Length: 264
View 1 (cartoon, rainbow, N blue to C red):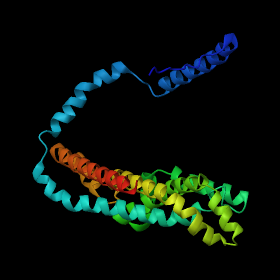
View 2: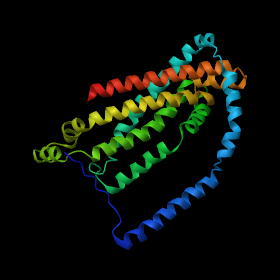
View 3: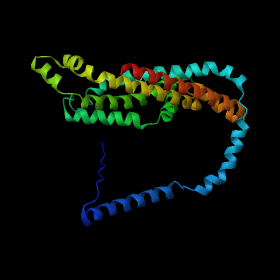
View 4: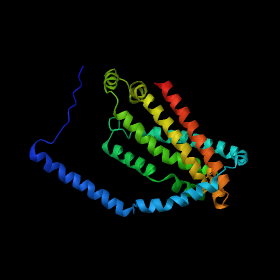
């Protein structure tokens, strides 16, 4: 059996006249971005010895320090867990009205989409700083920051999953006289739940990573120990923190993969 590969080529001179300006604009934008970000291969090469020096200061890791990291690591998981859960609670009431095919009015749809954009547009660290000022130092501020940002992300994904459902079951339920709640429970949820669960698991995995950073601004978790060790120039302790963080991320990724496989 022979395989034939079809390559779409610009047809005639007109096709090249269309492609060349697009390629030129793309190169110009990339060049402009490179100048703005000061991309420099030579600068990176010059900085390699400093990177090597920093890594050398971290070796060997202080494995004895890991005993002190057990409680902060557990706290990090707790922050991610409750942040994800509260994010789901905040996203669920909004996502149905933020879906184009379920929203009763266009202004409701556009208004809620903008609300979700604002919620996920503010970085978790900024939200953590705000909540630290509001509720004080500690993991609760991290939970609130992850929950608010996560609600914006989950609400968008939930709404987009609803927009992609098969409208047939909804039409049949509507014809049978089913109300809005019945159409959602029996026509929408069975179709979107697998996708929603996958998104939630991915979000939890992401929140594990995020919660390790929030500790740097006083929002609890292992990030506090990480930044403290760096400020004290105890780089062997920093290496121990990095190892524990990697273990948490890998464990969350493994668990998420297993659960997604079970769902499929």
